[in-house]
Length: 207
Image (cartoon, rainbow, N blue to C red; front, side):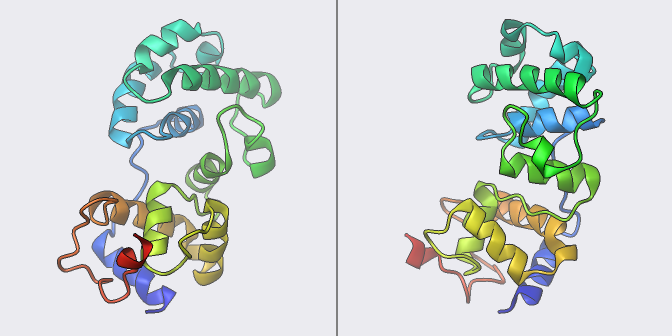
């Protein structure tokens, strides 16, 4: 099954696939993405609803006390580190980038808590730059569909996907794979019934 067929089948399954983090500004999005590491989007949306009422803009979060932020986001994983990171990146955005989230990879990854995946999400979602952010779902789905090898790193997975799929597909592909992994191709007990990829699935070989 070639990449074009895979893309179209995913698109048929999840035509409305998109970012499931709630945000209303560039500041909201980058904070939400940093908070989403090893945590569900549902859990992040729950805490950011409170967080963004308390700190509605990047200026207010830049001046926040870490203990107060910890109290708000305590229900999500790694909350102490994440609290420090989102305050620090807010300060950097205010002081170095005129209170606007930078629009390029090189500057984004200088912010605390922002790695390759987060930077790619921000570039794709905010600035419409073609990018593929490889999270745990994209990584798993890529390997099960034979688009990457078992021992490939996330960077290797990203590079292989960029080669196999048209550039104009990259941003949508990221969301399609996340939805497929999140709602059907689970890490444990995936829903294989009626899956259009059952004939190419590498799940048993990866175990």
